[in-house]
Image (cartoon, one colour):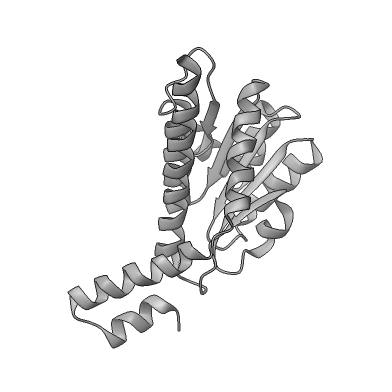
Length: 204
């Protein structure tokens, strides 16, 4: 049984459930590796310095997080003269459906990377399970082509945790999508806040 199911069985009253959920999320956050987070954010800064592209990928809720990351890094950093070239590969419905229809859903990210990615670019894969076939194929390709790969994972990390060169892992029980996706959004805002401060300091 995952923690969320357990919380509801033990505390079905909404105030108690809310307190339990927040307390559990705090426990997960406390286990994050700050050094891994720093490596991730430093990778984004290094990509900006060499004008490399940063691609975000993910499915479902993680697709929404990928879009949010691209917005917060590319636009939210407020660095138009020296931008972060961040792009979410989840955002073009025509491309996603064309690739899915013609080649299969497992190809939706790798086909885009084959067109857009260059060696030295960064690919950030967001996946609670770490086992989504389209994400794994994309990361394997990116590694083979000289890109820098980052995994943001949950549960036990899955294959993505092993394949990504940098991994920020939210340790949870299998099926706890909510807390994992909460953590990934916090990572987005943490990274975005730091990068905005760096860019502001440069303009002084």
